[in-house]
Image (cartoon, rainbow, N blue to C red):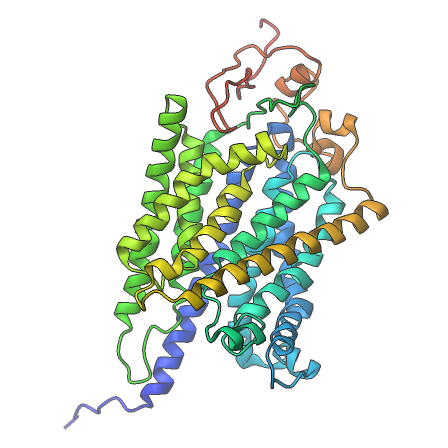
Amino acid sequence: MFGLVPLQGDITAIADSVNAVWVLMVSFLIFFMQPGFALLEAGQVRAKNAGNVVMKNMTDWSMGVLVFFLVGAAVSAMAGMLGSPGVEFSVSAAFGHINDPTAWVGWLFGAVFAMTAATIVSGAIAERMKFGAYVAYAFVLVAVLYPVVAGSTWGGTGLLSGTGYIGEALGVGYKDFAGATVVHAMGGIAGLTAAYMVGPRKGRFDENGDAQPIPGHSVLFAVIGTLILAFGWYAFNVGTQATVLTTDGSFNEAALGRVALNTTLAMGAGMVFSTLTTAAWEGKPDPLFGANGLLAGLVAITGACAHVSWWGAIVIGVIGGVQTPFVYRWVVDSLKVDDVCGVFAVHGSAGFIGTMLIPFFDVAGFSLNQLIMQVVGSALIGTFTVLGTMAVLLVVDAVVGLRVSDEDEVAGLDPSEHGMHAYPEFTDDSGPDRAVADGGTVPGATDEIRTDGGEATEPTPAITEVTDDE
């Protein structure tokens, strides 16, 4: 009496719906990278600055999404219009997403990438920059700097796209699938520039200019944060392959599989070869350089994951991991820049290197014009980010100043900037931070924690309560 009724529907509409839900889900997972960043950065600073770091992370996201919705997304669209010949410039079209419900899923996906770029910077300038100054810079980064870079490369238009002025001249568009340079290298070089301009932490360099270790308070936090970031990276890379079902209803398995496999292989290669490098260089494997190498392998493959062979992904991951300790030491020892979390080595150089290596392992074959585009595009993104960051911070410095006072830096940014302690039982007048600030030592301190590239370290406050008996 009752027969089966075949499912009726437009296959294209069904595919579009599935793909939209996929984009929403990966956007939610990319947001989960924020607690990863918070743990990673908090673990690499001293206990007296942990609250300040996580406050910056919350602000990056909360303020950032508002700014990117109201301003940043439109700036990105306008940058794309201006960079391509024959594209009509329209301010109203640029702001069209604000009242277009069909554009909001795509906007969210763009927003989580913008927030990632902003969050990278906070790890480089930790422990000495005024909170207000950081917020002002993060505002401009999300409103203008990142959108100009993204609009010049992604979205089908823009200076570096295939239809842009440079793209038309070379006959190719800039290849950066999920943001190795657009997101990570941009954030990494912004962090390096900001760290240079704000200056090193007190005690980071001695009177001879030699780097002195300032260990963070929790290697455990840093490594857990790294693994959370690695989990979110699957959404970051594989999620960018936004077509799950094709218009004929087929599962896009090969494209998704390539991105997932290449992301995984490069991640593993980055960690293993960064660890081997530090073990050979220093005699022992360093867990923080292992973590940074894992992230550098991920950054390096982020732009290439959809384009290169699986063996190319391994090579890119190896190079990303090996370069991490060398670039970090170059930044600290040669440039004398106090990049607290090593964001340039992890996000900056790894992102640029991985993106420029794409033509050598591209499954489409080697193209000299593509290599030229990769080099030119990376140079333009890097130059624009450095100059833009310097301009913004010079203005911020003139208006509110970049650094906290020496007294506030010694006391810690938690009490001076936020009126609290992340670890109140360990940071009162008799606790480890106060003892170290006064030039003393801390009972129960350990010299085993190394957060600074494997240098010989000074005693580090252990998270143990100091009692009257001690």
